[in-house]
Length: 307
Length: 232
Image 1 (tube, rainbow over the protein chains, first blue to last red):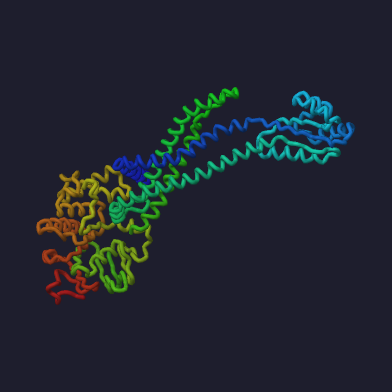
Image 2 (cartoon, rainbow over the protein chains, first blue to last red):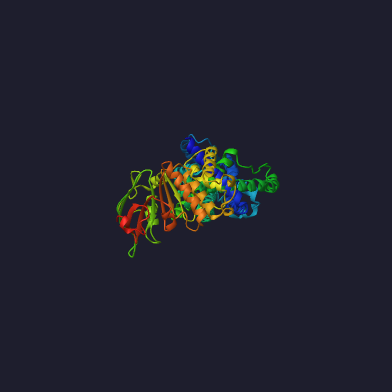
């Protein structure tokens, strides 16, 4: 165990030694990798801020049921208990809107009194308006609302049923698209990070070719030779991750100033916050992991050629 | 300790480096490998260090069959060998002390212990006062003595020195050979390859002579000018 620990300490020291030898080159590589990491990190920060907001949004979808034009008032009222049955357990508020009331409301809101007078008969049907409580903007809840509407369409005398929760679906779909786009962006830029580290380590292997060859002749195991490069890759990823997170955190200040003005228009105090400590640690670990992966690929490929 | 059983090594169709070589080197022996350039001396040394593997035959070093040893086992075999190269192969970006410490560090020795032993090894070859110098600041003979210090710092059972006196003047070569003989005198098996007549003439040790990859003589003392004294 002591030997294992000592060899890792030696490898870490060798990695830092390499950084000290070529600080400019290391810094440049850190900046390149940091630029690649900053974009997905900013995306993660944004999504993490929007996620609780979107989860808190109550859908309260509204279902409007329109009877057929020729349905009698009795037929319309007979639908009510069936609606109550369908909506049992859904915390719904059901309101019956007689066609006369609908016409009055239309007259009052639209200012089309003259036009409506020319129609003679009331063109509006009896209808029901149902407000559903406790629905979130998830796909599952949207599907549930669709299911209720489907049952209502099958009731006798019903002409059409409208569900106005489509915007909820759109929001959920938009967030999914954003998540997917972020994932693809992160994957692409992850490959970029691995490629940069791969090339950095390749150059180091070439520079230290003689040292590697001599060490092998002196009895160094492959692990002993590989470890310093692994640490260098992980260190590069870690430093780049820290720089990227720092840049994203700094960028939040001016962004929040702009957001505050916008949010005030909606009586909101919404602000983008930096990621929580656990999130920061996770992103740093991912950065170091990407660096390590690049180093491992490079070492496996280039050191295998040395006898 | 080192055994070659009908060993041949062919690098390519027209490059036969060793052909049907059989020999035995016992523990604590001092053996010179003689022969002109291209005779197969370096190939033979490389096989002992598992840098090359035989095309046919068997090479046994410390009881391990080089032809069958797994890659992961090679470093552990080499830790019992002290390798000295014609061109030293010192790392020019670090002090000679750091160069000599390297074989100990690769085995996981504590740094303080490695430094102590490296200083002791440098002392044995008379270079302790230059411990912090860079290899480029030393003469060829001094660099070769650093290489010897690096080879013996791990207290190996076998020292393999490939043309250690090449490119050295007589005085420097003498000091290098004296250092190697000193280690032999304490029981270390030494195999020294050379094509330098003065090296062979200065010793009554066993000389194995190779020509065109074949063993042509194996006897005590230089057999180059006394073919009747050798045995092929």
